[in-house]
Each structure stands twice: as C-alpha cells, then as structure tokens.
Amino acid sequence: MSRQSLPDRHAAGHPRARPGAPRVFLGLVEIAGYYKALELGLRSIGIDATAVDLTEHRFRYGTESARAPLMARPAIGARQRLATPSGNTFVARMASRAARILLLLWALWRFDVFVFAGGETFFRRLDLPLLRKLGKRVVLVYHGSDLRPPYLDGPTAGTASELTIEQVASLAARRKQTVRHLERQADVVVSHPLYAHFLERPYVRYLAIGLPVLDLPVDAPPRHEDGLRVRVLHSPSDPEAKGSARIREAATQLQSEGLPIDYVEVSGQPHAVVLAELVKADLVVDQLYSDTPMAGFAAEAASFGRPVIVGSCAWKEIRRAVPASDAAPVLACAPDEVGAAIRQLAIDPVARRELGERGRAFALARCAPAQVAQRFLRVLEGDIPDDWYGNPSDTRHLCGAAAPSERIRSVVRELVGRRGRASLQLTDKPELEASLIAWASEAGDGHGPAVAGGVSDSGCGGR
Image (tube, rainbow, N blue to C red; front, side):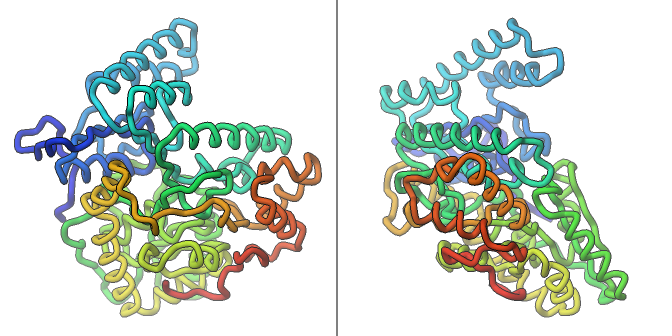
C-alpha cells in the first residue's frame, strides 16, 4: 500500500517555498496528526511550514521520518523532564523557560504566521501582544476539549471525572476568560459550531477548511472480505469518552445472536498499529458521543475506503450547522442504536462498499493534506470567503460530546443548582443559556435535547 508520508524537511528535492509566501509556524502541541498533516500539505504547495510538538505525542503521528527542528529540541526535552515525577524542580522550571525563550526568539526571526493549537502559545498567551506588535499574523485553531465548556465535555466532566461541581464551575470561568483574551489577540479563530459556546466573535468554521489526514493512502487498500465474517474495528484514543464499553457490549450481543462478526478494539497503540488494523477492517465504529460528522479516526478510516459508523446525540444540530458539502458520508446513529448500525452494515456488503467508496471520495477531496493546505492558505493570507465564517450567537448545541447526554444533563443541572445560571458563562448568549437549562431540567432519554434544534434523528441512516 502506498501512502503519503512526511518528508524530511532537509531532504533533497523537497519543494522550494514560493517567493513572497508566508512562512508558517505550527504548534505547540499535536492533535491527532493534524499539524503534521498540515505541515506536509503546506510544504507540498510551496509554503515554508514547520510543525513543533513540545509534547512529543505518545501515538507518534508522523514522527518516524522527521525529527523536531534543532531549536525546538531543548524545549521538548525540558518539558519532558518537567513531566517526570522528580523533574519539576526550580532548576528544571528555569531551564524550561530559558529553552522556550530561545524557541520563541528563533520563531520570531524565522516565521511570519503563527498557528497555535487550542491557544497553546509559548508563554500562556502572554506572548501574543509581542507577536502582534511585531506584525506577526496569529491563527488559533480549536479542536474540541480545548474550547468546549467543561460541563459539556466528557474528558473533563464525564462519568470518570474526579472534579467536583465547584471545580467544574471554576474551570468554566477560567476557560471563558482565557478564550475571550485569546480571540481578542488573534487575527483569526478556527472553531466548529458545536463547541463555539464561549466564543464572542465570528470564527472560521473548522470543516470549511477540512480535516487533513496524515497517512491518506494514494490507493485504497483492497478489501479482504471472504463472505463469511465481517471484521469490525474500533480504535479509541480515550475509551471512556468514545463510549467503548457500550460499543463492545453491542458487538458481543450481536455475536451471541449469531451475527458473523469479529470485533477488534485497538487502544493505546502507536499510530502505525492502527493503520495496519485499518487495512484489515471491513467496517469501523468511530465513537458514540460525537459533535462532528467525522473526527480524526473516522476520517482516516474513510480515506482507506472503509465505511464508518458515528454515534451522536446531536445529528439534527450537526445537519443544521454543517453545510452538506462539508459533512462526511457516514452511517449516523444515536448512541443506543450502535448495535443496529453495526448489524445494518454487517449484513449488507453492497452498502459497506458503497459507503466506503463515498467516504474515500470525500476524504480525497476534503482531507488530502494538499487540498486542506490550499484552503488553510486562504486563512493565513486573509482571503477568507464569507460563507466560511460562523457566528457564536448561532450556537445551539446542548448535549456536549464525549459523554452520555444523561451525564451532561446531570452535570449542568447540578452546576446551575449549586452555583446559579451565571456559572455556565453564557450570559452573552441568553437564549442558549435558557435552552441549556431547560434541556437539563427535562427527564433524560439518552437521545439528546428536545430544544434548540438538537434532537437526534430516530434510527440509523447514512449521511
């Protein structure tokens, strides 16, 4: 199988940067391979771009073939030392700050545009006024949990969370304040309509640009269907947030009923292992509690021509907020209907093939790094079409993401009961605030909100 790979930035024959084009810094954390893929795409169209991941992501997205820039390595090493049990000493903290200062000075000299993931800047947003003063363009890209209100976010306030309601309220207040400061310092903010609750200014819609897939195959790997058993793959980065226990239970139930499926779950493994499993898969279950039609793993699966099942409590709201041209073809279902969705595809090879082909075509057009880079370049250069913008005042999503809607209801209800409606940090959006409180006060049925346009469709259906 041939695939696009990340070339060494010093390799011979690498495309030269276009004269007069912006020099682009991407960082400082990696989000599911997004920035490595964007770096690859920008370079492929002649843009001088460098991605720096100070966290050295545990899944090693695209790092096998390219080392971090020389000037970033001291900061990466310093951050790794701070993360060790014995490493957070005064000397280590001073060394980390010094390494970051050197990295910032190099970047200021080297780049014209700074793209920050989730507001992760060199010095906790204190450096943004300096960037603006020096005429640098700043773009903030939010990916979900880095912007979503904490009480709507599974990894923060889900069933596995150890935070108290008071801590959730405090975190929400801090995040709202941080987001307000960041968006006023940035030239452009990129977000998704279903987690734009805390934004106050127009933003560029995340899916208008597209989600770049780092390892998009040039040719779709052949299927190995033998007509006897169907291989179902689920690969959660966070099993709790993705609803893995309920997916596993549904697959086990289907097997007990005699459906010929093999359920494979891969978690905590390097990215290369996941790609190898995608080659062998017949269909993929992404997650149960999504607020987007196609997140990172789903986009990868689609690029391999594998049909994808995505669960959400908010399909009606997703369809309202995301233009059809930006919405990936997946089999959409409510969280408690994942078993029916698996059965629907498992017994119908023609449907699997058709959905896989549509997903593959979408990925080639919307997820290929070079294609995403062309659209992202318009953001970098300030040539942004009007229809790419979203307005925070149009935010209506209520049931959150990465957690069952009944859990989100409970957290919101308790938060308002203990700390008042102001604790939601939505006073600038009174209609959204009222809708969220009303929804949380209703009896939960597991299917999501019945107000503000967020009812999920009954049953499963292809998009």
